[in-house]
Amino acid sequence: MSQDARRDEELATERRAQILQVSYTDTSLLLDKPLFKDILSVDEMQRLRIVPIQADRSNILFGITTTTSQQTMNQLRQRFNDQRVSFTLIAEAGYREYMLLYNPPPKVEYQDISIANAGTTDLVQQVSSTLSQVRADDMLAYLVSQAHRLNASDIHIETQDHDVRVRFRIDGVLHAIAFLQPEKYRVLIGAIASAGNVSTVADEAQQGHISQRAAMADGTQVDVNVRLETVPTIHGMDVVMRLFNMDAGKYNLDRLGLSQEERAVLDEIIAKPSGLVMVVGPTGSGKTTTLYSVLNSLKSDERKIITIEDPVEYQFPGITQISVHSTEHGEDASFANKLRATLRLDPDIVMVGEIRDNDTAKTALQASLTGHLVLSTYHAGSAAEALARLMDIIGQNPLFVSAIRLVMAQRLIRKLDDKCKQPYQPIEAELLKIQQVLNTLPEAIPRPDLTQTKFFRPGASAENPYGFQGQLAIREQFRMTGEIRRLLEHPTNILSAQDIETAAAKSGMRTMLQDGILKVCAGQTTLEEVYRVVG
Image (tube, rainbow, N blue to C red; front, side, top):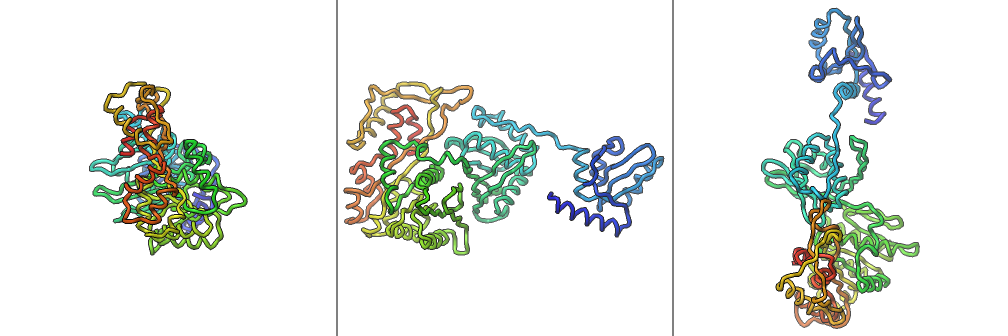
């Protein structure tokens, strides 16, 4: 409670005491608050709404609130008839402060979760017990702080028939962390809804954003910066919280794991003053991290950069960032309208957080034709699929096709832990599968000799029982050059994603599957992991 709010409450209590013609005490001014635990039990203080403030052999002064009954005061006079009993009115805040002194909350031990026990029965019981003891704000801060410790990307809160499951997505895989009882879930979901400005009784899916600094009961400061996605289910409201990483060093092109060829292509494209660059992939594939890293590399005093995002995930000094929220016309209309308004501000570079509809796509393409470098993300399974969907939007328009400079598709796969990975000899079927993919590589890309290649599978250690540590990206880069450009500018019929991918492969594009297999041959991941993600 702020000092002004406390002062207002004390003034209101003093006026109430004057009306009731009773004594009044401002407990906020008492420097010394002795405790008299042998006069009343804690249960009686809570039930009767009364606390002893002063006492000696002859006198007892009780602090009462506006809800303390006259009957209670009469009973206390009779109970302590050998002492002079008097009463003074105190504010509700003062009563709560005294009760915290008489009945301090149990100290909660916030035990750190380790990857070694994530998903185990012991860990689930321990975290469930911790969450059952803490206040609502601490529940949220504790979950977020532990998710950051484990480099988790999401927190999933899932309602079930008898309880509520909490899971973390770590390196792309979900792990059970805790189970909550319904009453504790309602407290947590209320705190999340309040902070994220969403409703707990909505009949439709909702989106929200929480950005705050929380102080936990043990004094720990936690930055809570998450995007909320909620959906009503048959058992209640499920929530997914996407964590935003506030580490500025993360948004650096050198940390994206680009190969020399991929980096050279990207550097050449973004050095141009105009054109459209798209990063495509499913949710959680690192698209925004890639775009932020590109923006960071382009930022300078000579360029004006504007972003349009929903929401703004990370704030960059020197860049104008615009947040898009739902309107009565819908979020898609907001994106297109904000983009058109942004272009009137004479930017050199524009980042559109996501192309969601035809109007935004056409506006972005038009901007890229009129002297702007436009960066955006797009939800698609591959670069070819993104191009096929864009072709449906723009039709046979050679100008629009020429505006598309680069489409980079990516997925995140788990990286083997170098400390415990184990060499092994793949079976014949695995080697055949690897060789079949290598045979489809463009001629310019060297093929590894499988007879000399060492393969690895995940090992295990006390610190890491899963054998994977972190994630790496597999990518494909689609450039609008050569045969593929001629094909898209003058299509003889409707092109499928497969037609576009085949033409791109002939033009030298390496697919995500091929990139993944090369990383298997380099000992960075496993064949099973590549096929788990790529399919």
